[in-house]
Image (cartoon, rainbow, N blue to C red; front, side, top):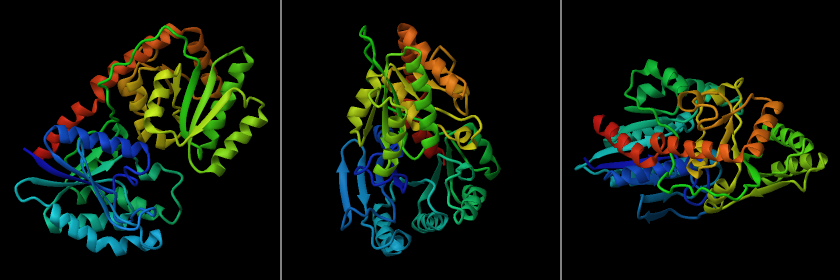
Amino acid sequence: MKNNIIFLDCTSNYPYQFSATNTKVEFMAKGLNESGCFCTIHNGIIGYSAIKERICINIEELGKVITYPRKGNQLISWLFNIKQLYKDLKKAHNKKQKNIIILEFPDYHIYLLYIFIAKRLGYKTITISHEWGLTISSIHILRKPFVWLYSKTFGFLTDGILPISEYIVQKTSHFHTPSMKLPIIADFTKVPQTSNSKKSFFLYCVYAAYKRVITDIIDAYSIFLAKGGQHQLVLVLAGNEMQIQVIRQYIYNKKIETKILIKSKVPYKELIALYHQAAALIIPLNPYHEQDKARFSQKIAEYLSSGSPIISNYVGEIKYYFKNKKNIILCDYSIQGFVAALEWVSKHPKEAQNIGYNGYLLGKNEFNYQTFGRKLHSFINSL
């Protein structure tokens, strides 16, 4: 059955800005499109401050992309876009197809508005659960009561749930709402090329706001250098210039600025190329943080698709898919643990390359967007 799918407020100003969530929704839409669905990516009711009027574009392999302008303050902009949203959703509804709106984790009042409009216009809704809100420490204290309320009630209001992890599967089980696990996904159609040339750098892609974790990796890398390590460290940092400058200063104070390359605002194709060229890709997961237990970083799928080995920790979803020294390099979550992992990769480049390729094969079997698109299509048809 061909379905009419609208991803509503699942993206952040797609395709004008880059984020892991934008990439994931793009792959979801591509997978559904290839399964015969018509998809629309709608950037949500709050709007994008960089545009002055509603924009609707067509992307051949996806479908439509709709973006509203932000009108005034972010807190009230949604009020000015309600009428346009209702008009667009009413026009998009197709009586000859199953009509589905896929939502994510917006503010609670916005979620209720979306559910109300969807039901009024005859759409079924599916809600993605990428994070478990109660585990996110950065949420402002004034938002926490609404996050708690959302976590306790959202599943009763929607027709389907897409939890990203076993942790969230368990947390949402009390809703008794049809669900399907939504893994990380990427494009695994391009087989990574093996190379005999020595790969000369490690790479860590992260938001600059995560200072504590970044400085731990820098400290581990500093010890690696002191013990004779030769690889460079490439930090791909997202965030504002002030946050990035804090990291620059930390590196400068440790007197290793010639060994660490900081990159920001890297185009996606260049970023993927860096993944392919890296000796290892680092993604720290803290076993003492509930948020790391609950989530499953989209970055892991992109790392796997490159064929380069991943250095990480035995936390959350990792234990359900990976085996140490077979398709991933696992270490203790400590500075010395990361030092040991960096040293092992530098001393065993061929073994590390094989681990990276096995990781690619795992990703191709488990996280291929085309395979997931067919599964999601079947799940939608079952609702």
